[in-house]
Image (cartoon, rainbow over all chains, first blue to last red; front, side):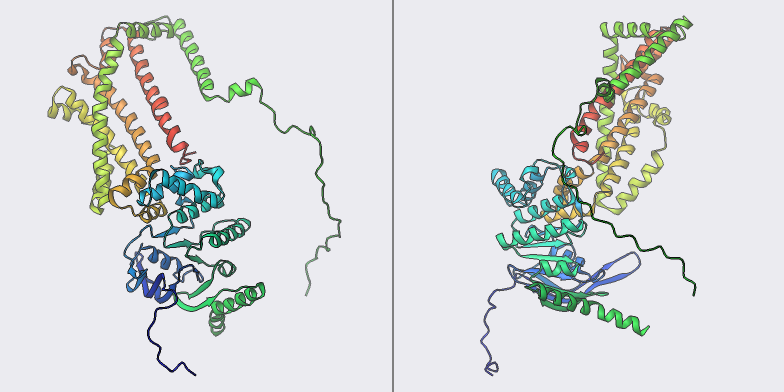
Length: 266
Length: 294
């Protein structure tokens, strides 16, 4: 009762920071036109830890690239703070999976400073102070004058995260940043990322194919089905560990039930 | 059904936990190497040793032959070299060669930059560069000399022409392949900073392709130096004083063989200095330091 009274239109408590509105993404290989995602909708609120989860081939990385502005949707629109995304820019900082995302000819500090200066955010001493602040946050102060090739994989990813955060973007886009790390380092990095989030409450859009990682990192999880990527569900993440277990098996079922059914029909 | 014989279950064994043993001196943790090993680890010292042995063999053979016209001894060559340096002929000739070389090298680099730029900017530019390189790279620069003589006459113009030909393709080829091999991630990172066009090329692509660019410059230098000396041997007289190649040729005509050897030694020395001092220093300061080359 009471809901049948038409409510006057009022803004949501928080306007979405990022809106992905019916986005279809296609790209061409030499022989085929591939539809990576088909009419995907979701919106990310400020402070969200929004995870795109799905098996390989569900277009989650392509979707992230589109949000990054590296490819244009064939249908639909991506809006950041209400403005359509047209190209890459420092308001959406990417953290890639690859370790070679740091400029090898610059030290850790120079890498972060260069990002700030090249994008015109800050310069000179201010840039340096900001860079050191975030390098300190990821516990790499001791290594600020090292070149990337002297660092371990986990340290490189921490520099990339520090660089992304130092730019203070509207949203941080992370494309399976921990996928190439060993299991122990990965778990530590996940914890560190959550600690960083507790401190600064940045907004992050995180792509992963690992269900436990999605549950651990995310506050909200978008499930995508493969070939082409379509939204299957948008779930809230779990609080307690039992909830997490239940959520994990639920996601497991949603993602793979279909495959099992298909396999049985063969 | 007969089953393969199964290995019996492993015996139950007690667990082993070792307490760390306090106390030093159980084994050597760190110890300086012996003086000989330290010296032997120095690359320049090993090379110096090789050079000394070679010089000794040279000297011994020269004395055994005892014929300055065929094979002057090491000491005679060094003496001729010292004389040449002292009276200023060798440095003057070397400078004559280097001047021409720098002009040709500079023009070659500029042309290679232009071609690579075109190749990056458009697909037809890429095709153009690839076709030109595959056609002209195998063509020895010296083979163009007769043509150059007709076009540019007996002057530095001809030398510069063959130099440019020998330098351009090597540099363009390497630089272009360097740009192609820049990882997509790095390009995306640059774009993420809001860089595009010339700024992206200058701040991301050139440093990222620097190892290949440096290789191109090195190969180009080596080609240019060989080509120049060879071309000068043929017609170095034109440039007034002539360069090192001409110095070698002249002294051969006068049967002053120690001077010929001194000229060759100068050619080698300049090559070594550029290779080992200039290029290696650049390498140490850049790509080695950045870990872009082991």
